[in-house]
Amino acid sequence: MKYLRLLTVTCLLQFTSPCIAADPEGFSETRRPLNQVVAIVNDGIIVSSELGAAIVEIEKQLQAKNTQIPSRDVLAKQVLERLVVEKLQLQIAERSGTSVDDSTLNEEIRTLAQENGMTLADFRAVLERDGYDYSAFREDLRKQLLIQQTRRQMVGSRIKVTEQEVDNLLASLNASGKGDVEYHLAHILVSIPEAASPEQIANAENRANKLLTRLKGGADFTSTAIAESDGQTALEGGDIGWRSIGQMPSLFVEPVKLMQAGEVSGLIRNSGGFHIIKLLEKRGDERHIMRQTLARHILLKPDVLNTDEENLARIQQLEIRLRSGEDFATLARSNSQDTVSAARGGDLGWLSPGDTVPDFEAAMKALAPGEISAPVKTQFGWHLIQVQEHREHDSTEEFERNKARNLIRSRKYDEELLLWLRRLRDEAYVEYRLGDA
Image (cartoon, rainbow, N blue to C red; front, side, top):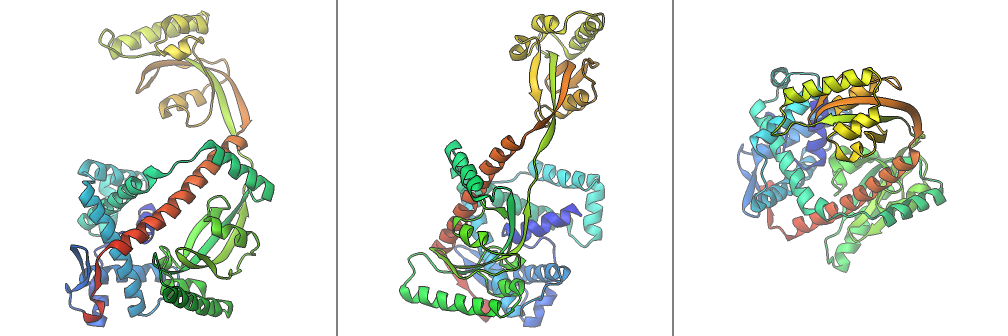
């Protein structure tokens, strides 16, 4: 189900809290009291029941993927670090006054229900049938949305992409012949702190080399990442998904272009630490052809002088005149309240899917060339639509520019997010009490 996929992605990638009220008794095997403090994070705490629930949920997800689960102690450290980073982001949200009101939360849940083809009541019933506490689900989703908003404010709002950057990326991709190729990557990070000492760097490099030796010797990359990686996707086995050359961190580009599927890289060093990547799969894209429509319309908008009912009567009279043979462009110029298109006889130009609101697009798609619609109601008012022509348009160039723009933004966002999270973590007061619990 889609809601399960959303929970998995947001729990594991967004540093959110456990998404179900999992029974923490599985964590009792380590004999930790239910609500003993396991970490102090600035002025907040994480208790063993939170950690236990998160561990149980992660173990279920790893079992579902048939992934080897590391020891409880190793898993506890990885999960606790994730909860710490989550707590820090929620503290930023609280200090900045960021909030998610019930209306926004309800709309998000309603969207999830619709994506699964359910009513809200059915969605809730399925959640509860599958063992999810609905109130806990709502609050976990609220946390996810809070973290997303905080990241947009702290990181996303600073990301800018220029047309020159888009041009440069496209030129680079075309020159390398890699523009249509995407790579499925997994990643292990052995991190070093900012302003690390030579000893810290040497220790990290030694640890990274030992991991690389194990991987080259046949150790499972997924299990190694879960147990050892300091990266954000450690608990996903290091899987960072599909990336094009333009989307992946720049330090990965040259190694990846030379790798074959299944191959593990050597050590890759930057200021954040030592990276090891594995190329899982590689794929190419095809050209993008879309159906476009050349259309024109007449619009009557409700205002203080004309009610919606009066506009419907007027548009129906215009429909009669058009079907009697009067010229569409002439009537549009003298009657349409879309002033921009009215000056062109109602001409909207070539329209691609998604350019207009859904009700308008649905009515337009049903028309043959030369055909005039019945009155169509949208949020803007009443329309009469005439389709003049359809065509199959090769939108590859526009698609590639938009894709390049999104890839640059995504790459910048990933790099800035990693830097922001590292600084947030380095500057925080964090005291672990896991060994004492």
